[in-house]
Image (cartoon, rainbow, N blue to C red; front, side, top):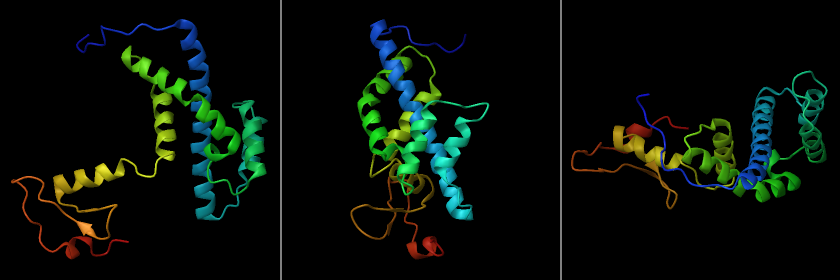
Length: 184
């Protein structure tokens, strides 16, 4: 009761929202599975487990908890290309995500406008957006770390490690080589 929510909410077309919600949920599920499979693959590669991702999808499909029909398509995609970098770049799934992402965005945007929390939809959309971009928000994090703690940063337009005196309150941190010694 202390914090206020939105009061001037935009109008919407109920039929369109229902169509968009169906696409948004599908896209979010695909990205959730993609992220999960990516984590399993990374662990399997690191620890040399030899996990076959298509077998994971097959086992989950026959299990007692998940049993989603979507797992059949996932199993097919992973069996077709065992070197697939991520489920979202499979031609079939990529095409579906490309066709559905604007509906997904409309749902997340409308939910925010109405003050309705949609953490899973919003987070999976962020995963999608991060996967499709060459440069991510880590560039901003590097700048913030340098601003607040003189941690240095790297640039995308030239080699080297840099530090800025961002304001008059910032001072020169001296020789950067001492700050970056031991970095791998």
